[in-house]
Length: 170
View 1: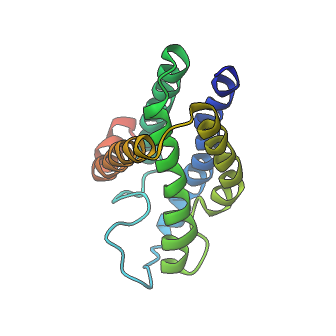
View 2: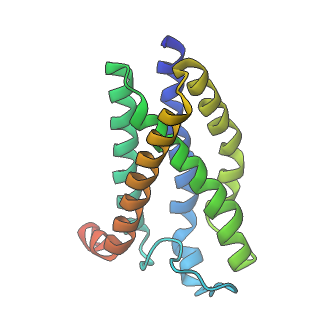
View 3: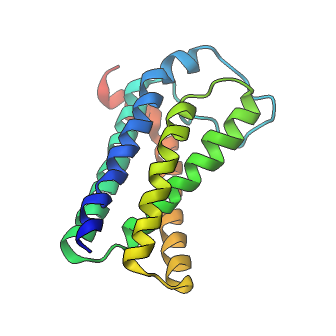
């Protein structure tokens, strides 16, 4: 379990590496007014063009990942952390490598670091599974919980991004 304590912290660290690309490029990308070639039910960055609003949302997500990591490292209970990790990997592949690039057919914020962080994320997942030795039922349970919580949280944040941007006075 000791080796997982160190590797567990790579999840929030790599998350920040990926989201920094999005934060840095969000406003410029949104200001271009690009329309997806394939209609999407949701757009990157929700309904805001505010870098500050997006940054606040990313900060809230980071706090969740840190709390899940702390919970795992302090108690040895890594189920929630595991579920969030897999949800993040799914997010990178599904949205940043498939849906958004195919829909916009051009650079989409986060695509470069999605590719750069995917291998380390997959290695962390491999190591976690090796150390935790979760059964198929446990994997299914924690991935479902992590997916529902993470994607529910992102949906909520996307809907509240304009409010979040007002809090920052951008």
